[in-house]
Length: 386
Ligand SMILES: Cc1cc2nc3c(=O)[nH]c(=O)nc-3n(C[C@H](O)[C@H](O)[C@H](O)COP(=O)(O)OP(=O)(O)OC[C@H]3O[C@@H](n4cnc5c(N)ncnc54)[C@H](O)[C@@H]3O)c2cc1C
Image 1 (cartoon, rainbow, N blue to C red):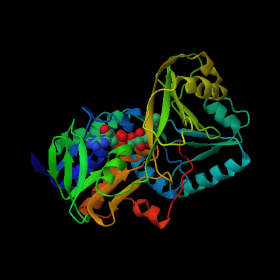
Image 2: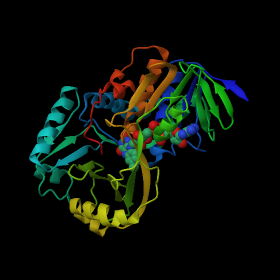
Image 3: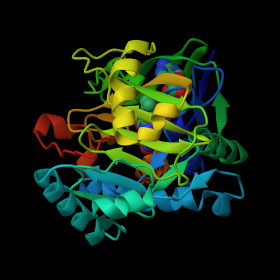
Image 4: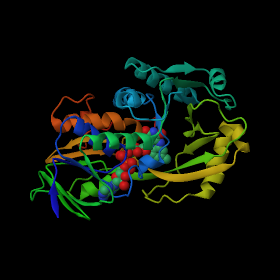
């Protein structure tokens, strides 16, 4: 069975759902979204901590956040759909003079682009989050407009909006190949386990699995999976009142209040070989994560563990997304490699991809994020990967 579409979107995470909606809103024609799972948002989106922030070290990430955070915060009002959003800030704790100089420079850049970022001393950080151990903290930056939101709510919200505009969302449909013409210079559609879909435009929003898919039409994406644990505690006395997302920049341990406990995580076990292995490592949690957690929020010593999971970051060499059309392959667009901050950028990326496909001026110039930057050696660099 073959059918046709004007645009095929591969992947039903936050990114694919947002792209499909924004394409439909821009009048891009018949749009089909293909998701291999039986529900949306079961990839990295469903494992995500839900944070959004303006505090990045590259200008392009700050510019994306300025638009995207606005879209997250006004999602319910704009679309009359529910979305759980808490704007209670991101607090970066810095523990060395050299790192503090870098953080202050980044904060100045963020402010110059229009973000609100305050610089705090250790006492002010402790006042904001009572119970925080701030010995050795040289300074802290606080983004009052940063926060957390529900990844599943945003994904299903965009999917609802997309369906209302006529987008066909096919669950349980695995794309096996992105099909290019015989000389590879233009896209013809995709093959799936349920037949082919012919389309002149294909958007690869298949998350960390997008690299294997791109390879089926000869396009090499430098995206590697990096497993990340998340642990949620049960209720405990002395939990923070605020839902502020706190990051200890010396270890990149982070937490925010979740229900009556906290949600926390930290970079992984230092795998040197990329792996899709998402098994929980209880030993690492007990020997690495928990001691670090208790050294930063000592009241956590009283907390029980309620649940944990592992999700995949989709890392690129310069920790920035790969966005936009691919040189030499007409009709193929990429939205991959978000390096652990793709949830918060899903709204604006959806809009920008729709602008690019329909030939409009993109709301944010993402030309620096095209795939070709790797071959040209034009890497960008981002040190605030949480
Ligand atoms: C532990 C953890 C914490 C995180 N915390 C944050 C955070 O606080 N803030 C933030 O902004 N980001 C965070 N992230 C990153 C964020 O989750 C991702 O960047 C974002 O969800 C990427 O969305 P996506 O739609 O591109 O990918 P995904 O959500 O992975 O969606 C890709 C979809 O493609 C589907 N798919 C794959 N292959 C095929 C195929 N062949 N055919 C059909 N469908 C296919 C998959 O099933 C999946 O549903 C976190 C990630 C993890 C793992």
